[in-house]
Image 1 (cartoon, rainbow, N blue to C red):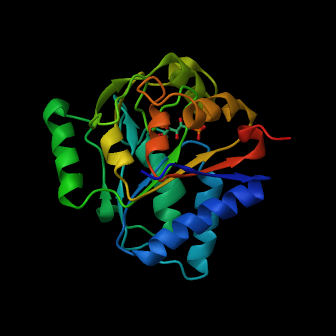
Image 2 (image 1 turned 180 degrees about the vertical axis):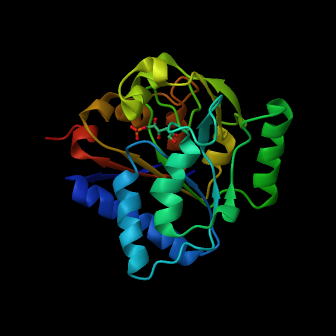
Length: 242
Ligand code: F6R
Protein backbone atom coordinates (compact mmCIF):
# COMPACT_ATOMS: atom_id res chain seq x y z
CA UNK A 1 0.00 0.00 0.00
CA UNK A 2 1.48 3.31 -1.09
CA UNK A 3 -0.43 6.23 0.32
CA UNK A 4 -1.49 9.40 -1.39
CA UNK A 5 1.14 11.88 -2.48
CA UNK A 6 0.32 15.45 -1.52
CA UNK A 7 1.67 18.22 -3.72
CA UNK A 8 1.25 21.68 -2.20
CA UNK A 9 1.54 24.50 -4.70
CA UNK A 10 1.81 28.21 -4.11
CA UNK A 11 -0.73 29.69 -6.46
CA UNK A 12 -3.26 29.00 -9.20
CA UNK A 13 -0.62 29.10 -11.93
CA UNK A 14 1.39 26.31 -10.29
CA UNK A 15 -1.82 24.43 -9.50
CA UNK A 16 -2.84 24.41 -13.14
CA UNK A 17 0.64 23.50 -14.33
CA UNK A 18 1.01 20.60 -11.87
CA UNK A 19 -2.42 19.22 -12.79
CA UNK A 20 -1.90 19.62 -16.53
CA UNK A 21 1.56 18.01 -16.34
CA UNK A 22 0.15 14.94 -14.65
CA UNK A 23 -2.77 14.53 -17.03
CA UNK A 24 -0.68 15.21 -20.14
CA UNK A 25 1.95 12.69 -18.99
CA UNK A 26 -0.68 10.03 -18.38
CA UNK A 27 -2.26 10.57 -21.82
CA UNK A 28 1.18 10.77 -23.45
CA UNK A 29 2.13 7.40 -21.93
CA UNK A 30 -1.18 5.83 -22.88
CA UNK A 31 -2.94 7.63 -25.75
CA UNK A 32 -5.90 5.22 -25.55
CA UNK A 33 -6.35 5.63 -21.79
CA UNK A 34 -9.77 5.41 -20.16
CA UNK A 35 -10.26 8.72 -18.39
CA UNK A 36 -12.72 10.15 -15.88
CA UNK A 37 -12.89 13.95 -15.96
CA UNK A 38 -14.80 15.74 -13.19
CA UNK A 39 -16.83 18.84 -13.82
CA UNK A 40 -17.07 21.47 -11.05
CA UNK A 41 -14.75 24.41 -10.65
CA UNK A 42 -11.57 22.72 -9.48
CA UNK A 43 -10.32 21.24 -12.77
CA UNK A 44 -11.38 24.04 -15.13
CA UNK A 45 -7.99 25.77 -15.24
CA UNK A 46 -6.29 22.43 -15.82
CA UNK A 47 -8.62 21.64 -18.73
CA UNK A 48 -7.94 25.06 -20.28
CA UNK A 49 -4.19 24.43 -19.95
CA UNK A 50 -4.59 21.00 -21.57
CA UNK A 51 -6.39 22.64 -24.49
CA UNK A 52 -3.33 24.90 -24.90
CA UNK A 53 -1.12 21.83 -24.89
CA UNK A 54 -3.32 20.27 -27.56
CA UNK A 55 -2.35 23.19 -29.76
CA UNK A 56 1.25 22.31 -28.91
CA UNK A 57 0.80 18.65 -29.91
CA UNK A 58 -1.01 16.79 -27.09
CA UNK A 59 -3.27 14.22 -28.74
CA UNK A 60 -6.28 13.14 -26.65
CA UNK A 61 -8.39 12.11 -29.63
CA UNK A 62 -8.10 8.38 -28.84
CA UNK A 63 -8.82 8.38 -25.11
CA UNK A 64 -12.14 7.01 -23.88
CA UNK A 65 -13.97 9.16 -21.35
CA UNK A 66 -16.19 7.66 -18.67
CA UNK A 67 -18.69 10.12 -17.28
CA UNK A 68 -18.27 10.71 -13.55
CA UNK A 69 -21.68 11.99 -12.55
CA UNK A 70 -24.92 13.44 -13.84
CA UNK A 71 -28.03 14.97 -12.33
CA UNK A 72 -31.27 13.10 -12.87
CA UNK A 73 -34.45 14.54 -14.31
CA UNK A 74 -32.91 17.02 -16.76
CA UNK A 75 -33.49 17.28 -20.49
CA UNK A 76 -30.27 16.53 -22.41
CA UNK A 77 -29.96 20.17 -23.47
CA UNK A 78 -30.62 21.59 -19.98
CA UNK A 79 -28.02 24.23 -19.11
CA UNK A 80 -27.31 22.36 -15.84
CA UNK A 81 -26.52 19.03 -17.50
CA UNK A 82 -23.10 17.84 -16.37
CA UNK A 83 -22.55 16.02 -19.66
CA UNK A 84 -22.97 19.39 -21.38
CA UNK A 85 -20.45 20.93 -18.99
CA UNK A 86 -18.01 18.07 -19.59
CA UNK A 87 -18.45 18.50 -23.34
CA UNK A 88 -17.78 22.25 -23.25
CA UNK A 89 -14.89 22.15 -20.79
CA UNK A 90 -13.08 18.91 -21.61
CA UNK A 91 -14.23 16.93 -24.64
CA UNK A 92 -14.41 19.71 -27.22
CA UNK A 93 -11.32 21.67 -26.11
CA UNK A 94 -9.31 18.43 -26.08
CA UNK A 95 -10.75 17.05 -29.29
CA UNK A 96 -12.30 13.90 -27.82
CA UNK A 97 -14.98 12.63 -30.23
CA UNK A 98 -18.41 12.05 -28.71
CA UNK A 99 -18.39 8.40 -29.77
CA UNK A 100 -15.50 7.85 -27.37
CA UNK A 101 -17.59 8.83 -24.34
CA UNK A 102 -19.35 6.37 -22.05
CA UNK A 103 -22.27 8.39 -20.71
CA UNK A 104 -23.87 7.29 -17.47
CA UNK A 105 -27.41 5.95 -17.79
CA UNK A 106 -29.98 8.57 -16.79
CA UNK A 107 -33.26 7.06 -18.02
CA UNK A 108 -34.99 3.70 -18.07
CA UNK A 109 -34.29 0.92 -15.60
CA UNK A 110 -31.38 2.44 -13.67
CA UNK A 111 -31.27 -0.41 -11.19
CA UNK A 112 -30.22 -2.68 -14.03
CA UNK A 113 -28.33 -0.11 -16.08
CA UNK A 114 -25.96 1.03 -13.29
CA UNK A 115 -24.43 -2.40 -12.57
CA UNK A 116 -24.27 -3.01 -16.33
CA UNK A 117 -22.32 0.23 -16.69
CA UNK A 118 -19.81 -0.91 -14.03
CA UNK A 119 -19.48 -4.23 -15.82
CA UNK A 120 -18.82 -2.47 -19.10
CA UNK A 121 -16.11 -0.30 -17.48
CA UNK A 122 -14.54 -3.42 -15.94
CA UNK A 123 -14.62 -5.32 -19.24
CA UNK A 124 -12.74 -2.46 -20.83
CA UNK A 125 -10.02 -2.84 -18.20
CA UNK A 126 -11.18 -0.21 -15.72
CA UNK A 127 -10.23 3.44 -15.42
CA UNK A 128 -6.66 4.46 -16.20
CA UNK A 129 -6.84 8.09 -15.11
CA UNK A 130 -9.37 9.75 -12.78
CA UNK A 131 -9.31 13.54 -12.51
CA UNK A 132 -11.38 14.41 -9.45
CA UNK A 133 -12.49 17.30 -7.29
CA UNK A 134 -13.33 17.21 -3.60
CA UNK A 135 -16.86 17.91 -2.36
CA UNK A 136 -17.50 20.07 0.70
CA UNK A 137 -18.51 16.90 2.58
CA UNK A 138 -15.69 14.76 1.22
CA UNK A 139 -17.61 13.30 -1.70
CA UNK A 140 -15.87 12.03 -4.84
CA UNK A 141 -18.10 12.30 -7.88
CA UNK A 142 -21.48 12.22 -6.18
CA UNK A 143 -20.50 9.45 -3.80
CA UNK A 144 -22.02 11.19 -0.81
CA UNK A 145 -21.24 10.18 2.78
CA UNK A 146 -21.61 7.43 3.76
CA UNK A 147 -20.04 5.71 0.74
CA UNK A 148 -18.04 2.57 1.14
CA UNK A 149 -14.84 1.99 -0.80
CA UNK A 150 -16.55 -0.64 -2.96
CA UNK A 151 -19.71 1.41 -3.59
CA UNK A 152 -20.95 0.74 -7.14
CA UNK A 153 -22.32 3.09 -9.77
CA UNK A 154 -25.80 4.00 -8.60
CA UNK A 155 -28.56 6.54 -8.10
CA UNK A 156 -27.91 8.86 -5.16
CA UNK A 157 -29.75 11.60 -3.33
CA UNK A 158 -27.57 14.69 -3.11
CA UNK A 159 -26.55 15.88 0.34
CA UNK A 160 -27.65 19.33 1.47
CA UNK A 161 -24.01 20.51 1.45
CA UNK A 162 -23.66 19.39 -2.16
CA UNK A 163 -26.86 21.08 -3.27
CA UNK A 164 -25.72 24.31 -1.61
CA UNK A 165 -22.26 24.11 -3.15
CA UNK A 166 -23.65 23.25 -6.60
CA UNK A 167 -26.08 26.19 -6.49
CA UNK A 168 -23.07 28.47 -7.17
CA UNK A 169 -22.75 26.87 -10.61
CA UNK A 170 -26.27 27.84 -11.66
CA UNK A 171 -26.76 31.33 -10.27
CA UNK A 172 -26.93 30.66 -6.55
CA UNK A 173 -30.48 29.38 -6.08
CA UNK A 174 -30.59 25.99 -4.31
CA UNK A 175 -34.01 25.38 -5.87
CA UNK A 176 -32.24 25.16 -9.25
CA UNK A 177 -30.11 22.19 -8.22
CA UNK A 178 -31.52 18.72 -8.88
CA UNK A 179 -31.54 16.54 -5.78
CA UNK A 180 -31.03 13.19 -7.48
CA UNK A 181 -28.07 12.05 -9.51
CA UNK A 182 -26.18 9.08 -10.87
CA UNK A 183 -22.56 8.68 -9.87
CA UNK A 184 -19.78 6.42 -10.98
CA UNK A 185 -19.06 4.26 -7.94
CA UNK A 186 -16.19 4.50 -5.48
CA UNK A 187 -14.83 1.13 -6.62
CA UNK A 188 -14.23 2.32 -10.20
CA UNK A 189 -12.60 5.51 -8.94
CA UNK A 190 -10.36 3.97 -6.28
CA UNK A 191 -9.26 1.21 -8.68
CA UNK A 192 -8.08 3.78 -11.25
CA UNK A 193 -4.41 3.35 -12.10
CA UNK A 194 -3.73 7.07 -11.76
CA UNK A 195 -5.84 9.33 -9.56
CA UNK A 196 -5.44 13.09 -9.45
CA UNK A 197 -7.44 15.02 -6.86
CA UNK A 198 -7.56 18.79 -7.31
CA UNK A 199 -8.53 21.04 -4.38
CA UNK A 200 -7.94 24.74 -4.02
CA UNK A 201 -9.08 27.69 -1.96
CA UNK A 202 -9.56 28.27 1.77
CA UNK A 203 -13.08 26.81 1.77
CA UNK A 204 -11.54 23.40 1.05
CA UNK A 205 -9.10 23.58 3.96
CA UNK A 206 -11.14 21.70 6.57
CA UNK A 207 -12.28 18.93 4.29
CA UNK A 208 -8.86 18.49 2.67
CA UNK A 209 -7.31 17.87 6.08
CA UNK A 210 -10.13 15.55 7.16
CA UNK A 211 -9.88 13.56 3.95
CA UNK A 212 -6.10 13.22 3.94
CA UNK A 213 -5.25 13.12 7.62
CA UNK A 214 -8.45 12.01 9.37
CA UNK A 215 -9.75 8.49 9.93
CA UNK A 216 -10.39 6.48 6.77
CA UNK A 217 -14.04 5.54 6.37
CA UNK A 218 -17.35 5.99 4.57
CA UNK A 219 -18.22 9.23 6.39
CA UNK A 220 -15.55 11.01 4.35
CA UNK A 221 -15.48 9.07 1.07
CA UNK A 222 -12.33 10.87 -0.16
CA UNK A 223 -10.47 9.55 2.89
CA UNK A 224 -10.20 6.22 1.02
CA UNK A 225 -7.66 7.98 -1.19
CA UNK A 226 -5.24 7.52 1.72
CA UNK A 227 -5.21 3.83 0.74
CA UNK A 228 -4.30 4.58 -2.88
CA UNK A 229 -1.36 6.15 -4.64
CA UNK A 230 -3.41 9.18 -5.68
CA UNK A 231 -1.70 12.47 -6.30
CA UNK A 232 -3.46 15.28 -4.47
CA UNK A 233 -2.71 18.75 -5.77
CA UNK A 234 -3.66 21.43 -3.26
CA UNK A 235 -2.85 25.09 -3.11
CA UNK A 236 -1.51 26.60 0.09
CA UNK A 237 -4.93 28.09 0.89
CA UNK A 238 -6.54 24.66 0.86
CA UNK A 239 -3.65 23.00 2.67
CA UNK A 240 -3.50 25.78 5.21
CA UNK A 241 0.11 26.86 5.12
CA UNK A 242 1.05 30.49 5.49
C1 F6R B 1 -18.26 17.12 -10.36
C2 F6R B 1 -18.02 16.26 -9.21
C3 F6R B 1 -17.90 16.78 -7.83
C4 F6R B 1 -16.93 17.96 -7.72
C5 F6R B 1 -16.82 18.43 -6.27
C6 F6R B 1 -15.95 19.67 -6.14
O1 F6R B 1 -18.35 16.33 -11.54
O2 F6R B 1 -17.94 15.09 -9.38
O3 F6R B 1 -17.47 15.73 -6.99
O4 F6R B 1 -15.69 17.58 -8.21
O5 F6R B 1 -18.08 18.71 -5.75
O6 F6R B 1 -16.54 20.73 -6.83
P1 F6R B 1 -15.76 22.07 -7.11
O7 F6R B 1 -14.59 21.70 -7.94
O8 F6R B 1 -16.72 22.95 -7.87
O9 F6R B 1 -15.35 22.63 -5.79
